[in-house]
Image (cartoon, rainbow, N blue to C red):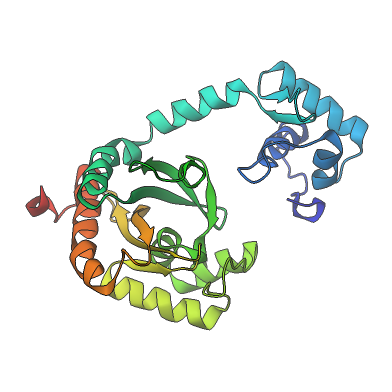
Length: 267
């Protein structure tokens, strides 16, 4: 986040709380440690003002000093709050056993994600043995239009809304295969709506393919997406022909538990 991204004070809002929230939002999986100067620069504040907010957040346990690297990192209170949120996530609670079932069937990484600020936010993983741990962090974000999870979630929205989401947060390709223009994205989202699943063809990471399917709630809204990821040599066309129906059935079973009708035959 840069200074230009910081929203202006709105009537009825507390500037103090708003700025404190924006400081916490500066931290991410890519930037877990930030100095006072970095925080002030991201928010367009002078360092003395930023320090007052940081000191208050530190006293509340939401930030803590990093004695080894210097600067600040999120505090233990954030971990406590995030675990409360995760443990009370209905979609995550109903998805975990289905994710384990897919992991055991295919010996591949299974992930669950939701759309957040133009990104996919990973809220659960089911991890096979020997999978790289950096790839399986709950809370990790990835650009939506470069992932199967994200494309499923974008496809669930009307095209003008999906396009606005991507344009607002920018085209942020990871590889040469990543989608980087609106025409291609619109065509691909139309295909995803028709077939009921999405494929990431080395768009997030070279050498990795992901297949994603929608999870819907009792209203029929797509509230999350479920994916299976693996190396390109494993996720061949023949393998996908076998795996895609299994992934969609697992997503449908989760949807059924959330109250979405029409999938009882899979249970």
